[in-house]
Image (cartoon, rainbow, N blue to C red; front, side):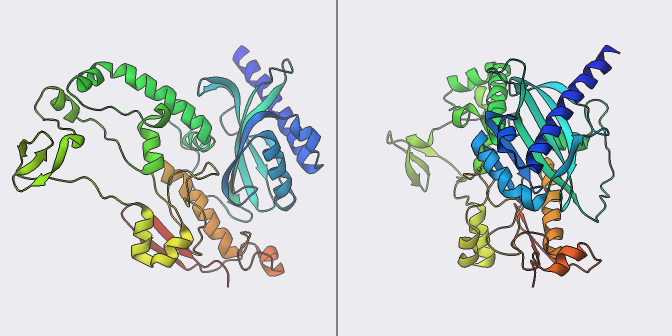
Length: 384
């Protein structure tokens, strides 16, 4: 009974914030909007209001961007989602917060989001948004056939887990992985110390963010130990630093000491190039130049040219872990569907009266898929 009362109290707090948020958007009340967010808050939008995947940081920037997009998107109906995980107290990246999943509608479809509220130290018990996610779930006139909900034996359903994962912004993810890396170092301290004693150079990533951010920023630079590290410690596998090698000769490696390290076979694990190189090889230098860098984080705190339209019309990219592809394939598909219907801003048919009125008339969609070893480029007609 007490737990239910606590849940209802938290839900009431969240619904009150959402009501004020909707009112501020509807009335273009920047003053009210500014009272709802912390000065160092973050808003991530996944197609719902901006038709992009982008993160906006800082109170002034958030207010400015909301003002710029609310007129077209017309978001409304913000409320906690009764069929989703109930609002609750959580700890994210070491910070306690109220976390709530909510739902809403826009001019283009139905959306859901995640709100995290934390106390404002300067205003007593007042709760303000630390992070806000708004994401598009389906387009108007379309039906989601994803087969929901799918639940684990314990914890939130998979759909809720995916939405919460989407709501973890870059700054929050970095802080989380610094904490996780420290935990891993502690758990593996015996092995790590032994590796250092035999000369193995350890690297815990930029600012101690660990292997996950090596993966997200460069797609490599790490390996998972499945026994090799233990063999190195035991001396079963020898270790030589590349900086000690002067060059290679027919007999093996010529060391800077003047000695030669005999070898029957030398495998050089170098020369890997980014996805831009693959694009150039598949489509030419001009297309690669129009697309630009792929993967790694850009100034907008998002993975570059991933899951969104690129500088080359009709060319899309999706890559990453199974979980990433499961989550973002939906958003990529929504954009393709929207550009086919002329709803995506910038597409040739977006502003035609027929496109705005017809929405989703049944039509045959021509989709072309190009598979590569690391990514999928999906082409669709973007109008015309």
